[in-house]
Image (cartoon, rainbow, N blue to C red; front, side):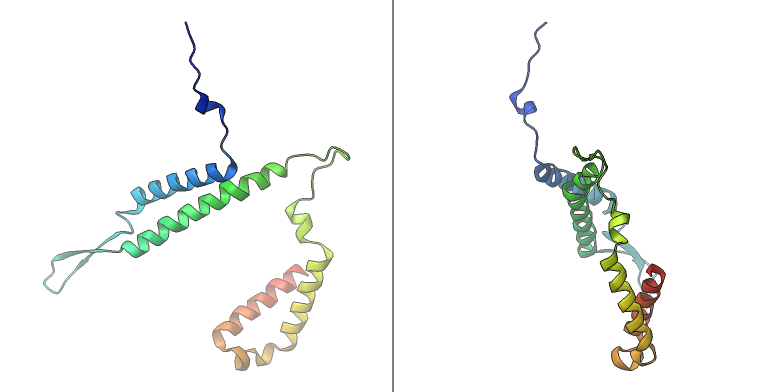
Length: 148
């Protein structure tokens, strides 16, 4: 029995080609899944009749966000995670993890300065930036204190 081999199967797609193809698949699947949930909205008018309205802009935003998310994950996330499993040939050690790189001295100094500055100007934050942004800055201060 003869085995036929297609020459197109031997070529390996680059990560960007694979990411683009998978993002298009994800966009098509998300469009099919969300067209009835997000793309169409039912309501009632004053005569108590069912009214169907379309929300194509919202559907397009969800489909585009899904495609971009899948593209970024396949193009950058998967290679990053694969590189985290490779050991250094010279030392035999795994590369520094994201968590250990996150808790290093420069980030600690930035968090400490942010916590001190935001603590010092806490009472005048509302006057400077308004009530809503001041709440976010106070939350940022809390995160900096937790980090420190």
